[in-house]
Image 1 (tube, rainbow, N blue to C red):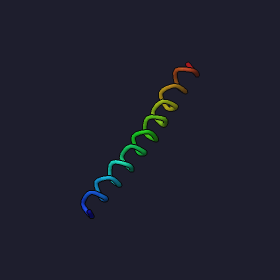
Image 2: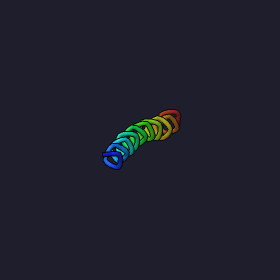
Image 3: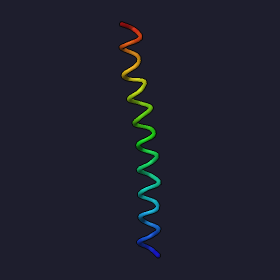
Amino acid sequence: MVASSVSLRLSFWSTIVLLIVGRLSNTVFRSPAASA
């Protein structure tokens, strides 16, 4: 029970972190291209 809940939390947070990193990288890579 405890191990399954921990793995679920890890997968949940890793998905959120990946989404945030993807959005940040998109904005970081788009702004120089737009300015140039």
